[in-house]
Amino acid sequence: MTKTSVIDSIIEIVEPVINDEALDLVDVEYKKLGKTWTLRIFIDSDQGVTVDDCKKVSRQVGDMIEIDDLISNPFVLEVSSPGLDRPLKKEKDFLRFKNKAIKVKTFSPMENRKNFRGTIQDCKNKILFLDEEGVSIEISLDKISQAKPIIEF
Image (cartoon, rainbow, N blue to C red; front, top):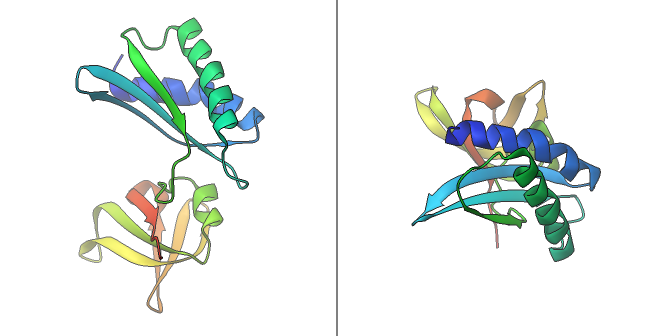
């Protein structure tokens, strides 16, 4: 199984379980770190995530992966909050940060550039509406390679 298909399979089986716990699946990473494969699952909710949430999801997900035999080689499972600089991927993610500043990178150039910084005005029908210093920019979510909040201290 390829790395991408492992991630897709993991998302397919774990997202309903995570949603049943009133949590959101933010991201899944499957990487080789040194000699060890690591599966990272990032969860969140409007109320935040506790250590108990991470433990519960870890137990449930670990059992499901083992039962479905999705990963054949040894791996380390990590379940955690995505942190302050969490990736924004789904409409729900962007709407959670509405009226907040973000930075966006696109896969290919739009208006001769790939990097944008602005305030989220809206996100609907898989289109991000970004206000960049008074200029409205529309970016299709499938064109975004990376989007993260701008952390202001």
